[in-house]
Length: 265
Image (cartoon, rainbow, N blue to C red; front, side, top):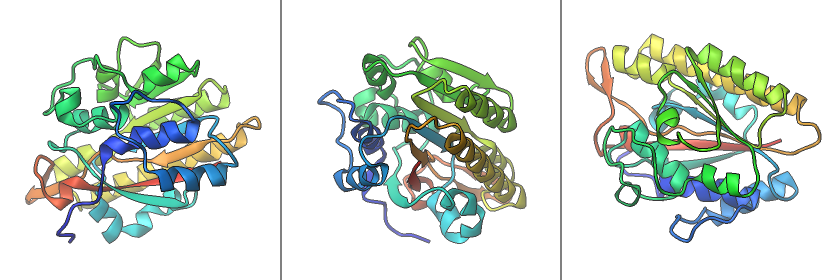
């Protein structure tokens, strides 16, 4: 098991997406990782005309390291893996707020599991200013639906991850997006209830990875000549707290270390 924390803080995620789409961000945002953006733009042949960001909740880097085969559908479509360090606390609202604001928890104000509407600038706000269509497709009661409410974002609340993927496929087929964020959390639920490495939890990782495969395959089919940046981007990890139970609250590698996979279409 890793005994260190990954170099890049999760707050750099927004900068990478904005750099690839050539969207200016407010000065208070953390910058993107320049070499990552350069590689991706080279592979895109210029700026990204759209982005599909798939967020599989609570999938820690250690799960990829130990059960790499489960991620084959993700590797099928991606070409660059970037280790990130999650927020402290490593919980979904804190992490997603940092991912989409380029700010630390101290700066955006969400430091624990609360889900107010973010009042500061977000990546969605900057995309909307640029005239881009932003869409969120998420499982029922997702933090995305709370943190980023009250904006000109088309949002779909889905009961299951199966419904979430089906809805995202419809959005893609109808070509009704420029920035599409998708949030599923079957693994998070299974890991809390059964333990991070239980059979049910590993099945959930495989199911979510297959959902990513379906979404990217559809994006390739219905691209209409436009390129796209894609990512499989978890928010934090999870560790075993007692037999059959998982959680993610602590500054430990299992909770903090994650890896994002980026690709281009």
